[in-house]
Length: 489
Ligand SMILES: Nc1ncnc2c1ncn2[C@@H]1O[C@H](COP(=O)(O)OP(=O)(O)OP(=O)(O)O)[C@@H](O)[C@H]1O
Ligand SMILES: [Mg+2]
Image 1 (tube, rainbow, N blue to C red):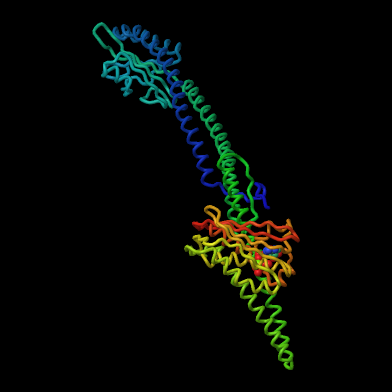
Image 2: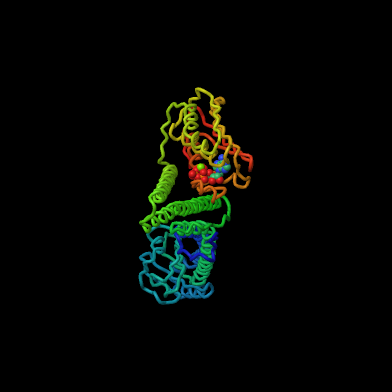
């Protein structure tokens, strides 16, 4: 028996089941991460932005109240000083924009006189809002360089309404950096988890698909004719059952294969024997032209006998092969088993008489059953012929027929040589003979009983044997009277 183990098998490329499992793992992990990523970055950025907004808007609003009267009274110097010192304190830049959107004061003095198109400014100037806040990742609207900035526009209110806007521009590089750090860490964790997930999926799917791959390889090898392949029955559940069924099937096929080749070699051997003796006999006749006529006749009679034997073997073999291929169809009719038994006795009595044997019939009259007359005659004939063949001169053979309920029972009893206990289980096997030399001498091939068994089984009955070496044998055939046909596997 060959056990396919992992080390011996060539590795199959990753098959589709494995890929699907890996993909499913990745999808699940990826999806949960995407959700987590969005939620987390959302929370973190929200938190950071909110804090910033609160601080900046407070500073801007506070300053706006200080700046508004200065702007209104056109106290440019003190306004400038206020803006510059507040900018220095808070680490930002302050601009004052008039209602037309023009920069009137700038603590960095860079954008004086320009118009700022920032949405936050417009929100206050034209949208009527008291304050507006926004983040610009790369500076825009002329208020910063390439650095990310937060801008807060706060309305400047005078006694007669809006005076313009105080714009607070703060560097938020640090905040964006810490946000990026969070995102980077999350991405790293995701990559790590994804890697672990892929490895886990590969291992898991490998464990799952290995038995299937092993089975695939085993069936391939079996397909190429190696019936000795078996797979380990490991794991649990369905896969173990599958492996077990496969091994069982392989076992059956191997047995079948062995019995087929055994059958062929036995059959050829059996055919060769009569052919060889015929050749010897014919060569004798051929190379001795002056052979006396009576000896030649004797030789040719022997050849004739061998031809009969060959013909018998061939017809037995054909019969068995038709039964094997389930091509032998029975033709059940209502028939008299009584007549079958009586006819067999009549046919074989002359053979028995040659050995000074007595064939007695204890035949119940009127036993009719549904069955194939030719096949059942063959059954009774083979058993009675054996009884005569394996009983010494002067022996007694008794054929009995009786009906018992829904069955008919035929027994063939003899007081002959009997069958040793060790051989009993095998005598129905094809070509099996207890004493090969003696049986062949009497023309036996060892097919008679196997034909009997198959015919009886095909007719829905059973055949059994009891025997005592040196005492005799009893073969019992039980047949259903309503003759249900049964297919023999
Ligand atoms: N009544 C019997 N008494 C003793 N031995 C028997 C008896 N019937 C069968 N056997 C043994 O069983 C063997 C198988 O019988 P089977 O009828 O199958 O073969 P055969 O008689 O040798 O040849 P064949 O019937 O094919 O011409 C015989 O060779 C014989 O050894
Ligand atoms: Mg026989």
